[in-house]
Length: 115
Length: 442
Image (cartoon, rainbow over all chains, first blue to last red; front, side, top):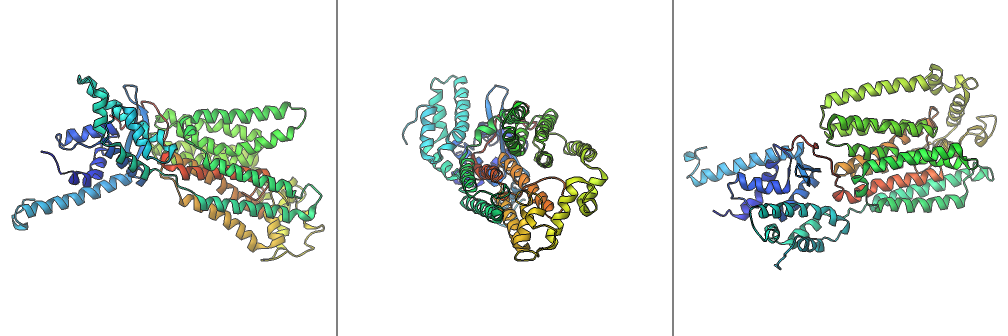
């Protein structure tokens, strides 16, 4: 099922930071990894990803460095900073609260929710 | 949306939206890498029109370019530029005005030469400000080699030249003042290379320090060592080398103790140290330092908060009594001839400029390192020059933008580089590093 684009775009910062939580990645890798983890639901356009990455770098949430990969190609990797990690945890927590609240409403109220 | 057939077409359309042309290669390089990866994946899956498909996957280039244009604009530093120029002009004015009475001796600064130096300084400042530092970041080791070679070359010229030796010597002493910036670039070139990178980064400081000492400039070598240690600590803190932080700091601490011991062995005789704090005891026995320290302190003791100090504090007039009064001890001259308040104003204004630069701190690590190196140079010189001018004489330091015409040009060049970093921060992206760059890459 095609996802609502506005839903994706609002959580994109969190998703990108989450991708970088375990390892440094380059843009193309992020697009593919997001697609894989979301079971092909999230199709992030590269044109949206790079401006987002630059703005995250400007805010100090990620840093970037260029290196040559095993296939002999130069690629720019992104690395989650401590500040970025903190922001990620805040966003995850806010997202959990929001999702739980939506779930409770959809299931008929606090009395009936299975959290 | 018009149809874009090739990667080149797509990138051209993106570039058309970005007004800052200097940002084009930096931004489009990554988009190109992305599309080439996508194209190769499609080709591996057997698609004949892999490139067209890769381009189509990117979406509309116009909004991408518009967004990149919004994110990447030069950040003009007009306020800092203006303050630098005002301080340099004030420094030039003070040099000429305070030494005017000494004409026609060599102590007096020529008005014409000072004006020429200020004009050249402003040109150098603007040259540094508009300089594209990206090529330097891409080739840090080349910059290092050229700077080192230039220092050695000048030293050789100084040694072998039958005439004009002093020109080479003076040039060498001023060129080595850029070495902390060169060392910052050198450190940057060793990022992500583990312990070998860390040791390479440390080792690179040795030849630079030796060349600084060749120029008989212990002060410049001291600034380089202090700056080098701070820059190394910064690099370790930012995890540039990807080595154990406690182990790297322990190594640096050991190195610092060794170096301080060597410096104390070379310069630190107990008599010399005592002469710094009690120069009056060594007015005649400990060479020039005791004499300098004593005369400066006597002049300061006769100074007022505002206005010229009391006459008759010494057997001769101030200008004949205090050595180097128009050069390294110009701050002392300000205190004696104008008062403590103008002295404090000069020191506070220069410190304020540095604080302002630090407040504009670049977000990008390359920029942070370069700005830090310049801030370290000026901080060391402010502190050491003030100490010197308060009568604690050990090394010779001029006060930034005040002492000496040629020195002011160098100062403006260094500040121009720092302001260039702040202006171009968003496109200061570093060079290639090598496959071992990050253990976080899987």
